[in-house]
Length: 244
Length: 186
View 1 (tube, rainbow over the protein chains, first blue to last red):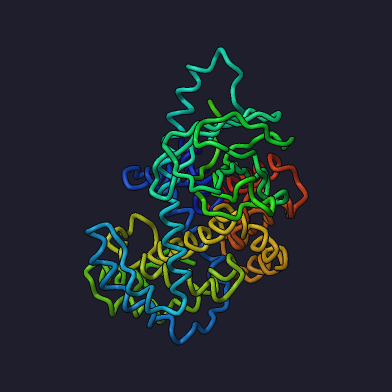
View 2 (cartoon, rainbow over the protein chains, first blue to last red):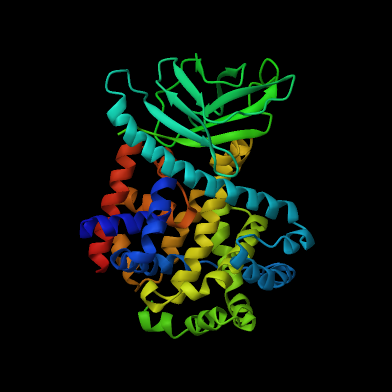
């Protein structure tokens, strides 16, 4: 990495401008890259005066009371790798904390997916020279971070879903594949997986798939979501990467 | 803000004490900083209740990660603020990317707020500060882009949209603005 690159990366990281995958890469690199540590430290302190322009607010009287009971538990559970839930149960915003836990799990899961995607994308560079290349490839992982499916989106009304696991679909339900081309458009269905096996989809005309575009598979009523938007539980999701 | 000021505020001592398991040190940080940190988070997540949720989780993180802090990682204050900012940004992103159904609701909430609020941070900077002087040398659009990212937690796409620039242009303007700022403050 050139010196400039380290500082550019550090600035983007501190400003929160990096794509999720790059941000994770920076966080993985930080503990053993002194130059990057220094660049991040210097960027943080460079912008800190902007934080100091706020007028401090009076926080809820109960805020510390929600933190304190979690201190012992959190430290104790660092070792066994699970997270204390006692604080969450006692908390009036317990459901939000539970959501946050789920989000953390998804983030971790996405990280696993990201690594898999990069490997896969590297592999595709060698293996797919004969066939038309997908515009993007997304590895979809479940909540535990296990890769469940790969979506190859070729753009121009063609996408392929390859299932990597046997997904259990209850009677009367079907799997539906979605993507989020942009926040303005909202989620769009790429098609249904009538049987729990790999399939070629014929999505509607959409903007050209982008790097980091979200893909996911949800469980919907037979015939697909009645609302045209995902309604059921998410079986797997992941962010697309451009094959290199 | 002079570096000496930031290291002599006692936050580093309290972080070292947290690393040794002294919960009273965390309480001292909370008593002094929670109000400011909540306000910093609120500029990003736009809601007081969410900002307090961010600060709550951030203090758990400060407690469990205090052993990772060392002066080579910058000022103790910068390290603490980074934890709060990360959690606030993650909350936004989870809302944006991880719940398709909720994405529109969250977006609507962010549309409602004022960019002026974000830009006010620049006006509030100490007139004599280096950051203020260096931001002043940037042209208006680049300065706005950088402030929207840092103060308001806006993404490249959101900044491009608000500044009516193509995404690639917004990215390269911000990048060049940041490089100019680094050079000016070096």
